[in-house]
Length: 121
Image (cartoon, rainbow, N blue to C red; front, side, top):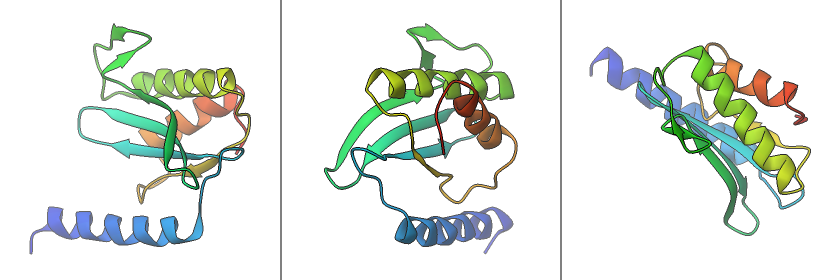
């Protein structure tokens, strides 16, 4: 088993443990983050209804392509965009789901930008 595979398996185990403890509702949705090598994705999920309330990715933010989509600046833009969409749909508080990723780098930048834009978690 290679180093990359064991990291992936470890992250999935942590993700499963986190998801067993948190659950999003319509009033208090879950802000779920996915990080790939090139892009970041964030969604507001209401688990009780099985619905995605809002979603953002660094592929396109506000209809515009992002040049360097794997940077901290792109993650900050995505955090601001998801906070803006959440506030438009009437959501002010969320539960942050880091999906097993460490809380640093792009994940931290997205979360802090969402907080600065008005989301509470």
